[in-house]
Length: 223
Image (cartoon, rainbow, N blue to C red; front, side, top):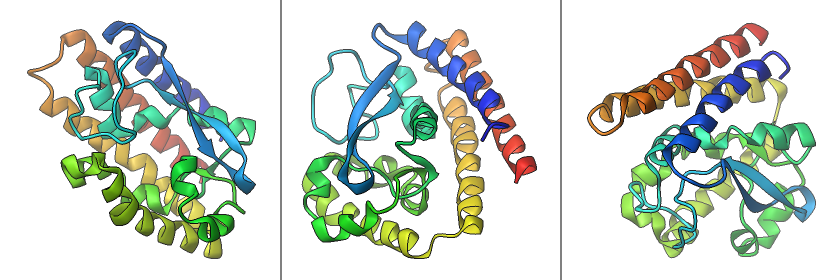
């Protein structure tokens, strides 16, 4: 964790700069999630929507509320990086069940009583399988009914599998797989967005990709 932090700070600084240049508003967004033993906490994310944007709880892949940088962060999931602060505070672990909002947790009280016996994680089995869920499911992803009936049960299944069989070796494998995903997604996003973004924004994207690659290398060496 200590080896990875300096590189994570470089990525975070590049992203924070991009957000500040891209649109007015705070860099960090705080969202309420349910953590271990049902305790609510403020989960940190980089802001990816326009300030004051309102709309459904869930997002579409090309949601009109996204800023240009926000779309990039959504594709790469780099908006989740500030959750390393939640890890340091003890609200989360690097690996664990994905923290959900109270509205969805209350739908499955028996299952979440078991899932929330473990601290939530920045990454996990569910996060890997649904890394680009809004892109996979398209506009249907913005439907709360579709999420409750078509996505959430599978996430619960994966979270229960993790809680019942977690091991240190399994955690290392999950982390290694996770850190490879943003760099590949970022490279695709940059290539696809060459005609839409300014050179300054693309430079920040390139810095983020380079730093993310450094994080992957550092973690693999540490492991």
